[in-house]
Image (cartoon, rainbow, N blue to C red; front, side, top):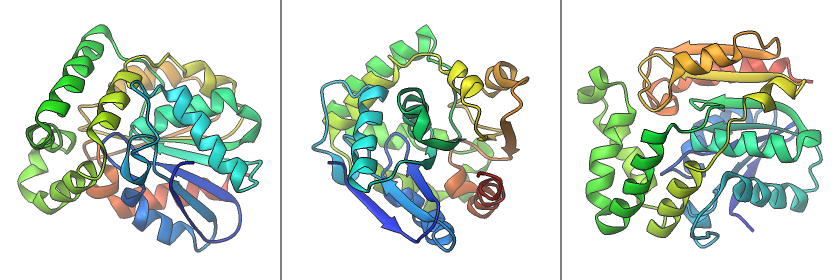
Length: 254
């Protein structure tokens, strides 16, 4: 079973980290949200303390099934599920496979849309590079996730993100890259969910095509969309602002 931490009582809120991260990225959020909710933060397959729970290709559907194993173990029949980046892809796969368990869905710097062909090719190359030279891969890729004009002022935050990446297995990282490139368009999952959906984006996020995402969900009545002046790493670039949005949204999830 996947590694997880649990804190607090009340409505169950499941937090899923992104690529090159683990559940530690949610510590501030988990500490604060657990004052009102039962918050479960999970290490996804191949990442953090779940590094051994990996296949050669970790598809989003497989990760969602492993998340469900944790919820079954905890006897949770209904949850609010929030995912950052890759964690959002897993949350969407979870909502697709276990719709009846979802009270609310949060996409935190994530998207419903699949990779285009160029991105798919990029992920394949990255899957090879990270195994051969992980330190160089982390050094080059992680700073690009932040708002570029703020990078000189974010050395501590960038190092924090690098430390998370170093806690995952290289085979798990490679498997996640291969899995992300195979994910399908799940815009219809959001449309058909009939539950509150939160989407937080970054104005300077180069990892997500925000304009295309906004266009795809513009007529969805169940979506609350917020944009912050950040890159892709809102939990480090704007933690208080991000948390406040999530807290306000959770109050409306029944």
